[in-house]
Image (cartoon, rainbow, N blue to C red; front, side, top):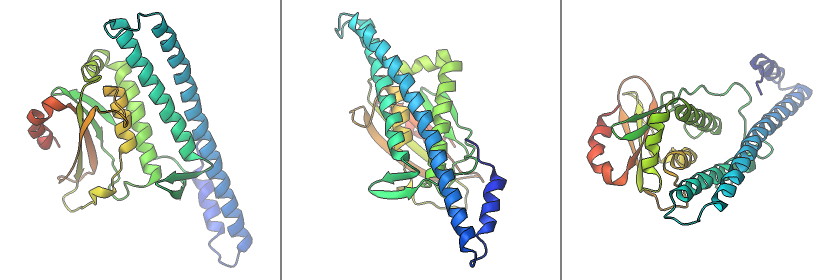
Length: 264
């Protein structure tokens, strides 16, 4: 759903007069309705995605039942990986529906208003397979408010869309993801900030995006033993704020670390 920015501005102006209680009440009601409508639209999108994944998962499971069910059977192994990936993606979509609720997100026991009621943040995410690792670049990372739910949701959506485009248009390169399947791997987050900026790295939470990357590229998940190390680093360089997320096989991480540290 796209909310007209001018319409939101009009209702903001109505509440400028402290004495106009009716105007403030109308503004609050209007914005509450916008939040609820936005939440419902997003829940519907995630439920449709979950339904699609459910159909695909059922198809994969029916195919599995036609195999020998033995790990020595290549067809079984490949289809089991695909079925597991689809099922986890479906669970993630359903989990997001629960988090959205009626415009309230609950994280770590703390309720937060889901207040993104205007156009979402534009995040031109890029994915590269380079030097034997996957690199996900988020060029417009908002360093002034990485923990904002609206910004994080926009980044999650952008990463998801970039992954879909990557697998669709880079078939040969995307096939390299197969070598990561079921292997132990490292996620290295590198945040690049302008020379004059600082950031509290403990306040950065990209756990949902890391889950997404581990599922799509490694067939791992946060309840698996595949993710062996999670590294976060911050560098000051240039005039832009962005993040590079690298997925590297554990046994190759040490030899590629110097390259990652130089890659800005």
